[in-house]
Image (cartoon, rainbow, N blue to C red; front, side, top):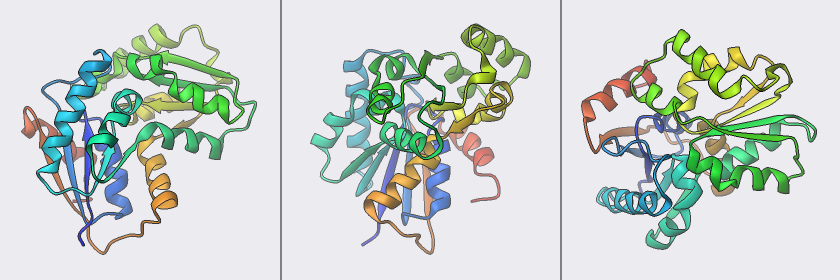
Length: 250
């Protein structure tokens, strides 16, 4: 049977997860759907996010998927139970994978910074999961301005520097050991985040979920993986961003 995974995100950010999964070759086919008409999700209320997520699930069912990955942290933080009820196949979110990835790299007394949308940070799911593993030095900061910067490809160092100061000026960045990128948009500015938090290890949702898929579902690489990119609005832009992010891969 062909293994066909749907990867769903509010916009282009989930391409960072799709790239890691594509490179892993764990599925025969990948259907990527970005709900670009309604991005961002992270500033919307929980009931709206759940409704959008269920609509995305119904759309992806048309492609006979037999696995779903919610690349959006905001969706993973509030809509996962409802998605699992409505799907007759496995549904996996990125938050659990991110928590397990921290466990692999962080010492118990490390200072951990979690950044994400307001919905993700307010859910406290990362904090709860890390506390259960024994971590206590945790700082969570909502950083919603990063999402439109990524969506518009506005990676201007000067602009990012100002936003970094807006969000992080009160931190002693030299003492941050781990930064959890709690939004799939954020790996697209990871080079700038690594430069700013120069002593920190960055946790990337895409790499983390590949490890979870291998461990939990015992998936093994396929000879060939095909990928299709879909969007609810302006699919040309999403495919253009995908072309840059997947450069020399497809």
